Length: 396
Ligand code: AMP
Image 1 (cartoon, helix red, strand yellow):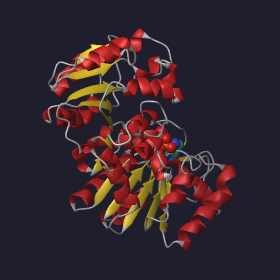
Image 2: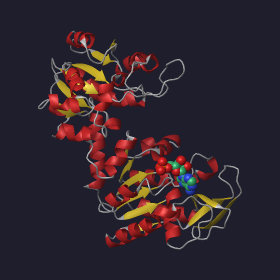
Image 3: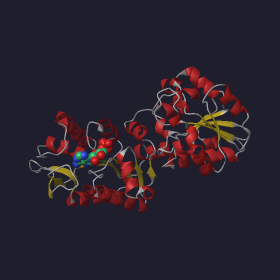
Image 4: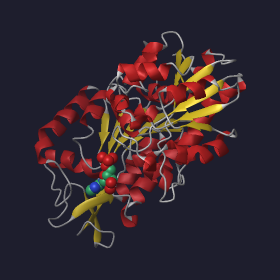
């Protein structure tokens, strides 16, 4: 794996794909600068080597057209503050102005290009557009995991123009290593905690990870499809009737591969999908009509805790309850606490993919787990076992 540490950027211009797709408020101020912060180590390495950095990113979904509300100009101040260098800005991503600004860049300087998605060629993965981008730098660095599953011009195609001079930035390298640690070289026992609303969106992941894990904890809405498939009564709980056979197949496969599956033994059932609903604790396979399971129950959490605390490698994707509602967040918080405790005892824990990331941030576990992935879709596709085009383009 060629990373930024394999290069010396002295007098070189690094063309870095970063993910500066940050949220802005109505005054175009950055409201969450985590992604800029996350790209900083890569940028600093280039500058400290005596090179200059040309940063390219997308912002929002301008659909191939200029749209001033989504100009990367809005983030120049925040990026300058974080990087500690006054960032220069050019109102083009490709073209004469961008080429001139790049050519004039001196060691230690940082240039931010305009939003890549103002150009239709970016998302189409257009070769001509990628070639124009490639003129701007000497070395291509990809540090944007969040878009690594897209074969866009700046994430994938541009790499063709740097056959020798291309590498991963620190952030992308860390993501790749974290996934490898779980999928290829995880110290045993390896446990995956999968939650979320539906089985259908996680099937490929389950099938792919079965070879890598010893325990599979299934929580959240997707548990009810498994329970119903096994003949349980799930009341009004969310479930997918057209996935019952598939659920049984998955359980068979898990058994064949010696993976122990843990479904919640009991749940907090509610008489309405609302924070103020009446609740009762019941066995997951005996939920009365008119009631729906919205969180894991106490026995389930005890069991989950035992498994998680004895694990050496943990992957967590998806909440085990409707964590957005305070009264049904306890299960997800407890799982976060167990994962944090296991991590403290030396386990490697990776949290990735959508809502579990939101949950660990919301409940303050972000710094108590080993790694929180920055890419929702990219993480899910990696767990599904797909080769991400942005990663393959560097490795080629
Ligand atoms: P996903 O995007 O598939 O990870 O699903 C996350 C969503 O699943 C969250 O918005 C949760 O509120 C929801 N969820 C978790 N458990 C349940 C449940 N028992 N019933 C309904 N929705 C749930």
